[in-house]
Image 1 (cartoon, helix red, strand yellow):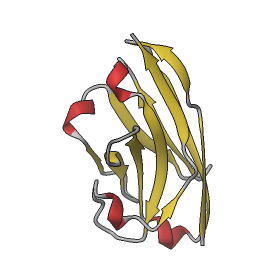
Image 2 (cartoon, helix red, strand yellow):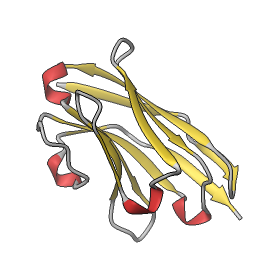
Image 3 (cartoon, helix red, strand yellow):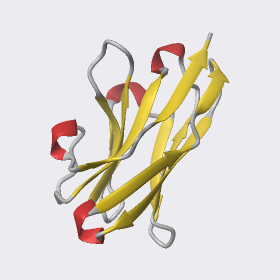
Length: 123
């Protein structure tokens, strides 16, 4: 079993920055892939960024160059640094974990989910 707890959400103005954190616990082999997803009202959940156990990353095209996913294995913590935020990126952001070795941006590939942290970007 894996437990995930997100933090770091909040309200920022357009162009601002936030860093999300996700504290993970439980079976390390069940979280070979870790990722951030987001969902806003009326929209499907979207994969934002994922990282595997050796640090390889994947991003959705819209955040490339602005968001950075990273992990600190000594602290069992996943991060998402978000810069130059846009109002349309207002959403609930979720941390997720998968036992798959190949990390996907598809949410159905993830087995464990946190409760989410709200990010609100005002114009």
